[in-house]
Amino acid sequence: MALPVVFVHGVPEDATLWDGVREHITDRETRALNLPGFGTPIPSDFSATKEAYLAWLVRELENVPKPFDLVGHDWGGILVDRVVFTRPDLMHTFASDTISVSSGKYEWHDLAKVWQTPGAGEAFMQANAARPVAERAARLVAAGMTPEYASHVAHPDPVRDDCILRLYRSAPNVSAEWKSEAVPAVPGLFIGGATDPYGSHAASRAFAQSLGMQTHTFEGVGHWWMLHEPARAAEVLRAFWGAAEG
Image 1: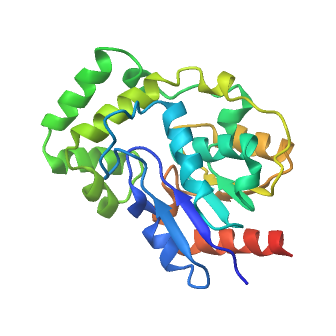
Image 2 (image 1 turned 45 degrees about the vertical axis):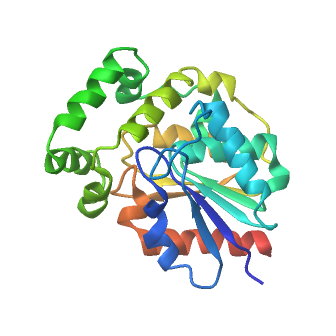
């Protein structure tokens, strides 16, 4: 019997990021989680730090019937990777496009550094919120997002923006703090776009291979490979899961 699948999105998306991929996975139960603050309210005591999001994800996964396969993108991938190295009992396999963060050598991209800087981060968010939705969407498309999804996430959302700032400011040294050279205790897949501008695809792939993980590269696409190649992404994931199940 095919195992269920749990998907975790990143910044600035929400759970709908995975809709296209999920539509092509008809033989399994799938669910996509919404990180607190990304299309969902947050509890009054939620700090929106990397530790808070990690604890939240662990709690969510503890309530998922096991075994299941886990897939993460961007910050969702960073959190998935950390769960793999600290609570491998929670999943059957994992797939991620951010495994290089666990290498201890990852350096944040320029936009992340702006968000991590007090004052500059707030100024960026305020200026961005003041732009017309069409202009914000166009900027996301220029970064590699599909026009349809860019229109979805381009709406102003002060809760999301605040969570982004708090999350990134909790993690300037996340690569060193969450470093792990251990071979994952469950089968892993590094999956990503060759032209991803927010990380080194080649370095991520090399690190994944050093850990004994499988890898797959989508040529000609970048950070949002699941939006550009949903059918192919589903095919790659299903092949990986099938091999892991024997």
